[in-house]
Length: 77
Image (cartoon, rainbow, N blue to C red; front, side):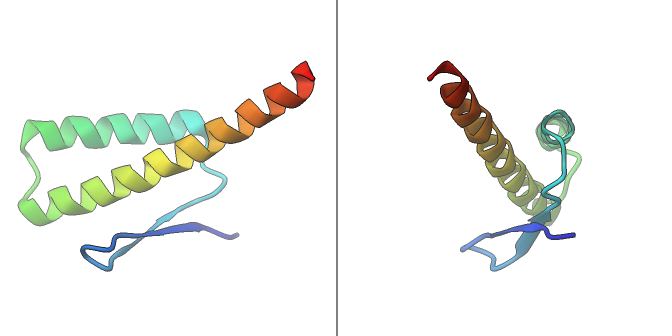
């Protein structure tokens, strides 16, 4: 199974997102990451990793939404 890779230019760390991850699951994970980051329970390093994971999840969700938008345009044409 292939995975999407998102590399952070600041840290060089690679975040992998399963391309089969459903939109709803990605949003739920993103919301939890945000909540955990806002609660202050992460160390600085954990916060950075959570931010990178969140950015990759956001990119994944935006890509999925763009695909759906394209499909809607095709149906409306």
